[in-house]
Length: 292
Image 1 (cartoon, rainbow, N blue to C red):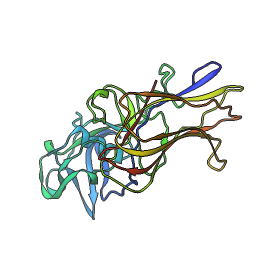
Image 2 (image 1 turned 135 degrees about the vertical axis):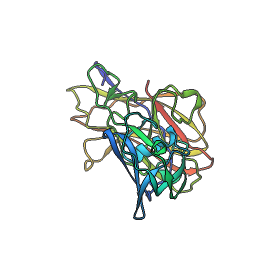
Image 3 (image 1 turned 60 degrees about the vertical axis):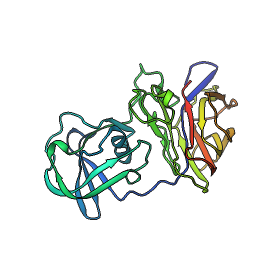
């Protein structure tokens, strides 16, 4: 939080609307020089194999890393990986992802028994959540620019937010925002079911006699009806206190800045960002909150 009479929490987000799907594939990293880098082992229906390189891209690597619990991919072709299995085996022989998919089942996949040389076995390097250091003032749980991930905010809804790095090489829903860090969710298929996406902060320890506010910027593209709510609570069993509710019904072509009403927590607390999508009337749904 900022130091002063008012402490500001900077946030960035994007939202969508489908329940978390179940993947038919169990994925793990093997034979790397650390836990985040190696070749990819895939298990499905009592079969075990690899992903072969056909169609393999950074967008596919992003989906694979997120399915394993990382925030995204550094590389889809890292150096230093060895001991890849070769020869005739079951494998994913082709995979093509856009980059916003929740699991690889949502990508275009071909699988079966085939031969993949060691050079063509897909390798990966995933991005872990990065702990704050004193010099990184915009990488803390209460003042987050999303430069390095989620600042340990947790996805607890039916659809996870996706982290977009600022390096300009990952998929993003706004072409002209390639070099901005943010988090987002993207919905391609239409749906008539109400869904709920929730992002919850780590516990924030309030300094005595400090008034709090939440500040964010958002951008939305699509055609749907959203209720965006920001609240705080002292714990899961103690109820929530609403700070802001925003009804979104049309596209915003520019960033919009919102500051919630002030609140005065009496002890440490959590902040929640809740989006309820009630109906979808277009191909894509995107809401973005970017750090100010």
